Image (cartoon, rainbow, N blue to C red):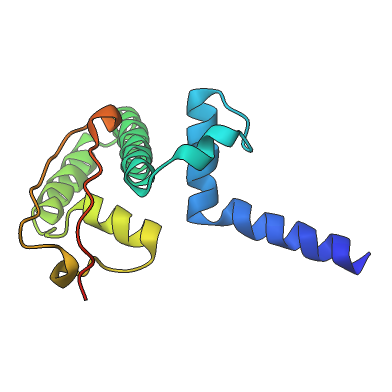
Length: 141
C-alpha cells in the first residue's frame, strides 16, 4: 500500500510540474497519447519552441477573457474601465525582460550562461519548429 501511495505521489508531482503540463498541452494539441514514443525524439529546441507557444496561447487566452470582461463591464461603468486600461497601458511599457527569456528560464530552471556560447555562434530565428537547426560546437570549458 505504501509503494502505491509513493508512485501516485510521484505521478502527481510530475503532472503538476511545468514540464508535465507542457507535455500534456503538446499531446493534446497533436492528438497524441501522453506516453507516445514520439516524445523521445523531441530535442531541447523543440521543447523550448513548444514552451514558448504554450505561454503565448495562455497569454492570448487571458487577454481575450479580459477584453470580454472589460466589454461587459463598460455597460455598467465605462469610466472605470477606461482608467483600468490606461493604467495597464502605462504598466506594460515598464517591462524590460522578454517573455521568451522568462519561459526558457522557467522551463530549464536556470538562467542562460552567455559565457558558454561560442564566439562564432550564428543566430537563426524562426517560428517554425521544422526550421530549427542543430549545430554541433566544441565544448566550452
